[in-house]
Length: 224
Ligand SMILES: *Cc1c(COP(=O)(O)O)cnc(C)c1O
Image (cartoon, rainbow, N blue to C red; front, side, top):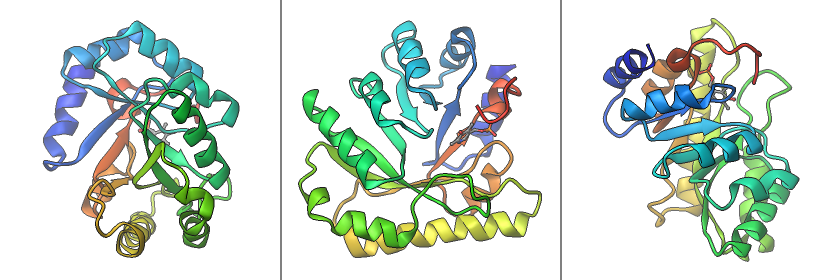
């Protein structure tokens, strides 16, 4: 089923949109099945789980971290992580930079924005992002590279609301691109859209979609 699901989703994605297969809570055998079907980009939201899967699976997988990252867990993923989608504070970015320096790496990161109505979802607003990008501390960070933005829409059936929230994230991306990254081609990613709303996200300009249950089936524990 995993292979069929992947092929179905891939067929609907325009060229240039990266499919991140969100494999959190799923066993290594499921990831291997997706790998055998050609999938190379996987998303996880727990540092130790991601480290263990990284050790168990082929080394050409690109590992994307998509969950809330605690600073004391950064060290487990820095040696191999490809992209951290979920930078939601200046402190976290600084801590990632520090750890990346130890490993002599430059780690690609996205700034996560709070675009949903729910209070619980992590993320910056535009003002906080400006403060971060204007800060002296940021200018000193040589071991992180900001490659774009990430956000999660409200969990709702109201498609107009979802369109509005993804449009908002696209507008934030355009503003930051114009004001801070006009000559930096690496600032190009808009990570938005999950199993239930990725077609809307693609319509609104997503360059990366993060799809879990539509590939691997429902997760036993909600939210994880
Ligand atoms: C779990 C998760 C996803 C994927 O969710 P599905 O609804 O299963 O596709 C995407 N993004 C983040 C940040 C997640 O935590």
